[in-house]
Image (cartoon, rainbow, N blue to C red; front, side, top):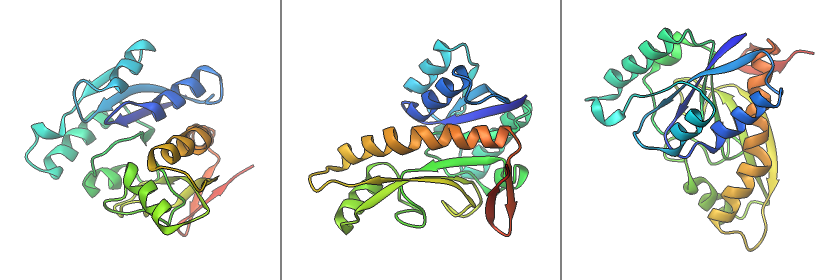
Length: 208
């Protein structure tokens, strides 16, 4: 049974999708052992509490720089004996020292089809605003392993979502979450916990 640590910064809707998948038996060989938040008083912490999952707050504002903060996160991950670290709406970019300690053991969900609308500054509504502005007909979500390159790690799963002519960024954000993010993130976590993901030459292969 693999230990899953989930990193959050906000409401925790992706965390909830993981909790539901765990409770529904979709994630069989892993369990969420701890939720770590970069902010106090976010609803994601309530979600953890409601399902008897341990949580802790390591607030970014309490540290001088990203290196100091990253060391604190790394220490917590080591304490939890994390086998997999999941970014679920975690809005802080960690120093590469964390990624190097957990190579191909950290995953993130991004609300676009990477390599479109990704990289530094592309998060939250900004992603969907850009998709609408560019007039793309299809967007979606991507689950990828985290590397020192923002949104640049090996792609695990992607799911497409169609745009409508009258979409607002808020409407599109909700559709991408419901139709893509909440489906492929638990699926990717399940594949990892079942030892079915293999990374070769920067690509992820799913083993039968």
